[in-house]
Image (cartoon, helix red, strand yellow):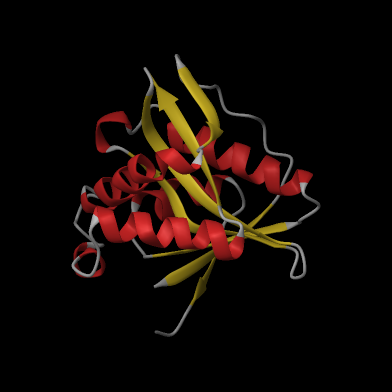
Length: 164
């Protein structure tokens, strides 16, 4: 496992994919958000999350997300297309530390990848935590996954190895 630290830079806003709406999920949608997270990790090329997901189900993820929302004030930014959640990023705003934690990472349904949805989710997430007065964002991820290789570095991502 590695950790990416993203500095909030003045990166240009990526073009929003057609017919894609970004918004925060409400409590009634957390099951759909958890399903996108689970399927997105499961479908990652090379299956780097296979051992991790052996401990999870979409139902367990939903419980984790709801608990994170209740205890930590987690927010779930979602990308919606044709009234269906196609991408997400779970965030925890830590005012005391000055860090926005992307505790789920940016995850996009496999059928919607390579259309700019991950880039617009990450850009908006960084914009929103900057609006909260934070200067840094962190996401824990694995080496070799698509977001760690291509998406996070575009926005100033710097790798830090976490011993686990």
